[in-house]
Image 1 (tube, rainbow, N blue to C red):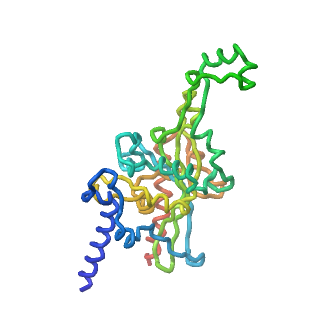
Image 2: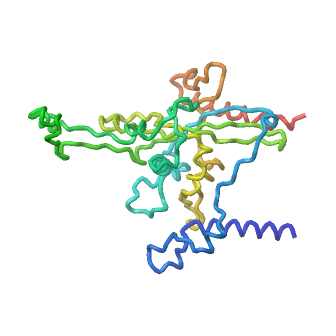
Image 3: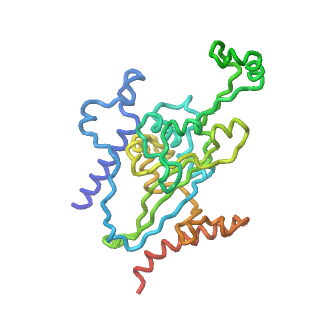
Amino acid sequence: MKLKNFLLVMFGIAVSYTSTAQSNLLNAKTPSEIGKKTAAQLESDNDKPLPYGYVHDRDVLMGKTTWENIDLDERINFPLYYPVDTAFVGKERRSLFQVLLNGIKSGKITEVYGDDYFNSKKSLKDLESVFKYIDTIPAGIDEFNTDIEGYKSGKKVLDKQYINPTELSAADVSGYRIKGFWYFDKRQSELKYRLLAICPMATEARDKAKGNTDAIELFWVYFPSIRDVLHEAKAFNDKNSAMPITFDQLLNSRRFNGVIYKEENVYGDRTIQDYMKDNAQSQLLESERVKEKIRDFEQDMWTY
């Protein structure tokens, strides 16, 4: 009986995921009807991110904050990167960076910061130079110098052919940095992970226009505040297009590969690179050591 109930629950979950792939795809008579849900679907739809359970401070027996690098060149991380060109895909498919960017521009994402400790909050105006940079080509500068007073007074406007706008796109993102908290819940006797912040790594639009390709931290977003936005956006499921996975589910279930580059420590949270210089292999081994140290705590709880 229990097995039967379990199978019914799993079937219900599968059906709910299937309905979020492309609603009304097989029943639509025109392309405009694809993606539109019926009144019955909207009434029965309870498609929301799974809420985090309340964790009392006294239930946290051990905790450790870590920072990780997610390299988008790794195949397992491709769902976070693609699609970079949206001209040939449907409106329901966007990269993680495009979802974050659209959320910031629309005002749905407001908890944006300049650092991973959430000290300096950033507004859309503060981030404009990060996303877009407008430069004047040398021919435009020569044209401007022919009548400086006229251009300054506004009587003359520089032609668009002399202006070179540079915008940041999903193709420019080389990776992400995430901040999370590993903790041992003594009430449930289980080691758990809670994602706290995420940061895209890319070249700023200004530096991109000048030919610089060095990736930097663009901005940090407080993750719990954007779960609703990420749950509405679907990542591509290569094994089954009828059952896409949301970015919220993908990140919370850690369906990506990340390398720890820093853990909180007494030395002012120094990075692994600070004390293991010019040796990539030693840095990777140290990253694994930090990871195993956290995992071993759970194993040691059951060792007598």
